[in-house]
Each structure stands twice: as C-alpha cells, then as structure tokens.
Image (tube, rainbow, N blue to C red; front, side):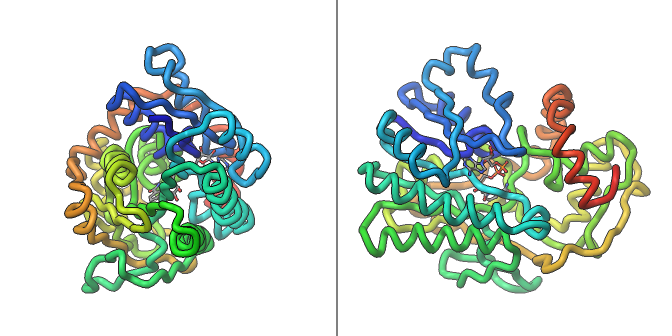
Length: 340
Ligand code: NAD
C-alpha cells in the first residue's frame, strides 16, 4: 500500500511515518511537507540511513499549491492520502490567523479536490477535539454528534476543513474519514506546546508560565496511541465517518506542570501565573466509544508512563532540540511570551 502523508515532518506526522513503516513491511510512504518552522527534515533523517528509508520518499511542497499537489499525485499514484499538514499552534493563530486559513482551509480543500480528481480511493483528514469548543466541568465528554463550536482561529480553521471534507462525502460520495483527537504529547513535539515547553524551561530553571488559574482541563494522549488510531481509521473506518480518539487522561494544565516538575526533581516555585489566553477553552474531554466499537481503538499508555517516556526522549535528543530552538523559534517566543 502506498500512502501520501502530508505534514510528515511535523510532530504527529513524523511519529505516524515511523509507526507505519515499522509496523507494515509492505507500506510505502511519500512524505509531502512544506517545512514550515514546525516541520523538520532532521526528524526523518534516521530513516535515510536505515532499511526503512527504501520505502520512504520526501517531497517539499505546499498543500495549498494546486499544480504541485496535482503533479505529485500523478507521479506517485498513492492508494490513500492522510492530511496531517496544518498550522497547529493556537497562540500563533491569535497572533495572526491568515496562515491558518490558507493552509488549514484552502490547503485542505486543494489537496482534497486534487485527490478526488486523481481517483485516490481514501482520504483521511486529521482533526482535533478543539473543533467542538469547550465543556463545563460536569458536561459529558464530546461525542461525534456534538455541534462544532470552535473558539480560536486555529480551531475555527480546523472545523472549516472538517466541514469541507464532510461535504465531499455528502456531495460527491468521495470516501473520506475524519479523525478528531485530544492533546498529543511525546517524541518530536516542537517546544512551543505545553509539555515540551515546560520541560525545556524547567531544565533551564526559568519561570514556567501558566495561563490564568491553570485549571484548564485537557485529555492527554501519547502520540503513538493517536497514530495507531489513525492507522485503524485508514484501514477500517466507514466512509463518511468521524472518529474521536482520546487518551483517558483528563488533567488540569497546572497538574501536568506539577507532574513534570516532580519527575524532574524541580521545585514548584518555578511556576509563574500569567494573564490567561483570550478565548481560552476551559475543558476538553473525548468520548471515543465509536472508535472503540467500530475500529477496536483503545489507548495503551497511561499518562504517567507516557510522560516518563517523553522526558527520557527529550533528555536523549538534546541535539535535535538545540537545532530548532533558534532563529524563528526564539523570535516568536520572545514576541509572544517575553524573552526567556
Ligand atoms: P505540527 O505543527 O507539529 O506539524 C505540522 C506539519 O505540517 C509541519 O511539518 C509543517 O511543515 C507542515 N505544514 C504546515 N503547513 C503546510 C503546508 N501548507 N503544506 C505542507 N505542509 C505543511 O502539527 P502536529 O501537532 O503534528 O499536528 C498534526 C495534525 O494533527 C494537525 O492537522 C493538527 O491539527 C492535528 N492535531 C494535533 C493535535 C496535537 O495535540 N498536536 C491534536 C489533535 C489533532
């Protein structure tokens, strides 16, 4: 089976590429990535010197570029397209929504149309729990039936993409599947997201900024559990369906940060409360019973095991981190959060 994976040099895409090549000896992957600040070719460098690399090829392209996408599909003729490519950071979307609309909305429509025109038989759109909006403490977890009520420019762009993808099933009968997952963490995550950012700051004994009261609740999933879910949706998902994935690990941000500090032997005096993010969703929680029933999905990692593995990975990959924590990364972090 030949797969076109977009965004395969980002956090989840990288993990998915490794997962598929390591799990299936007959899978070939064409990895299409624009290599924005969040995409890193070093992530897939180990493949090039391994036997797995024979079944992987990389092409630098923009999902919003019609001609490039058409040419790549015509050249490689994949059996399925999995669209991970996105602008993915909520704070950046508040700072400037434009790239989010271009990539997440127009880019998704572009690669979806091109895939349908090229007769690709399966299209999987990777989406997020954030499209559902926010929950109060006692609300039941989001199911696939919840209305889409996104609150940030990021989640609004992802919800828009989901609706366009859905419409291709309803209008043209194009066999799409949408997956929506909760907050991921694990290897290869860019250090602007909560867990790797807090690990980095704690290592440097710098203040750990916590938005508002820190009581925003997220459901945390170890990234390989998410990748396994996407793999199941690709192979077994019913066309036109949406599947939620979650990690069974609802935690307040402040508790996540305290767990990191404790695992690293650092004191809680490093915690520094800062003004809350505008429009900050209070709670996300996922009901993934449909994926459990139809796909046989269940997360394997507890939060404690996943966090220990993540800390070990970041400790062992200091060179990778040093290489990306420069240039554009530094300038955005200092504009947004103040110099660190
Ligand atoms: P990421 O920001 O780490 O990676 C995104 C990748 O997409 C990068 O490699 C980047 O270079 C590439 N890209 C961006 N714009 C592109 C374009 N126009 N054309 C081609 N490539 C482009 O993101 P991530 O955390 O790995 O998220 C991957 C997907 O999963 C996204 O669609 C995101 O919405 C979704 N998702 C993420 C989470 C999470 O917790 N990180 C949870 C649920 C869903």
